[in-house]
Image: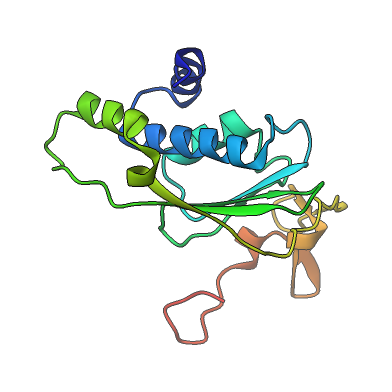
Length: 180
């Protein structure tokens, strides 16, 4: 464990927690396995399957962010992370194994355990073949006719013949409980 990096990740996230330790450990493994350094632009892509604390460590350590569009979030609720190198097409999938221990276990002890346990107990790593996600597209902005705020053309909707943002468009459910 690189103490300096860990302290910086904690500073970025705001506090120490087992979830952050998990993401930190995954990021270190990913950078090593991919033979990469922190992404400057979009050369490395991270696909995360949760929105938990560990994603902050992934962003900080790998340079994959929502803003650069090289962090892709899939709402699967799984501690699974896929990394893709655009230069060589190599992709790996890191699945964190279930961690033994009670919820009441000392928080600092859990963090230390996650950071220091043998890698084979922490996760499985496998090379995968996936289509490389396209680089970020830049879309024009349009003005919502209802609220007057700018919205990406790709996210705009038409309501009563006028361009509106998603919140102003309102939900359409067709009688189901899931908005369309």
